Image 1: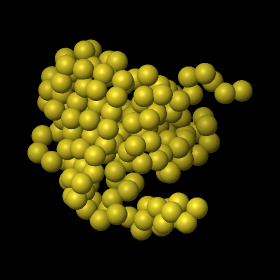
Image 2: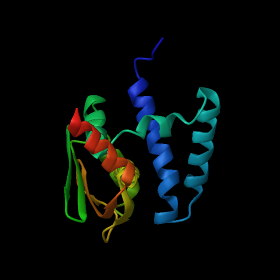
Image 3: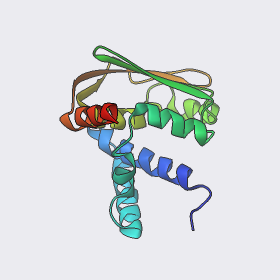
Image 4: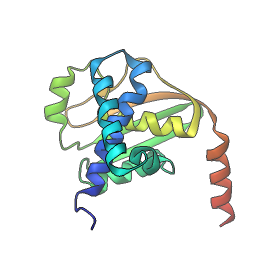
Length: 162
């Protein structure tokens, strides 16, 4: 029996995992440790690591679609041009609550997910300057990316052949 809210649960697990994965790149923090414990507990309960299994075939556009389908955002886009990737979220359901807490100094939680997925696609991913530009109902985050991974390139070629 599948839960009705399974996509939201998977997104939540991805968010926790992305906080843990990006913790080294951003800052050392207690939430990173708590996130790791939550992912480990979920992995024990559900066998294997559900987060890694779920996102292994995703790219940033899949994330945008999942966020829209879950009605967490109204619109979003991932634009990749050269060595720059821009991740934009508009109409975020929880922006008015989250952005006050984040105090414009931290990264949008959805941008963390995008960062994790970009790391799945590119060998080197970094934040360009400030973390996220938080707006009233969304965010804009710019990443610097270098070198597509071999696995991702092979997947793209196999899709073209189909």
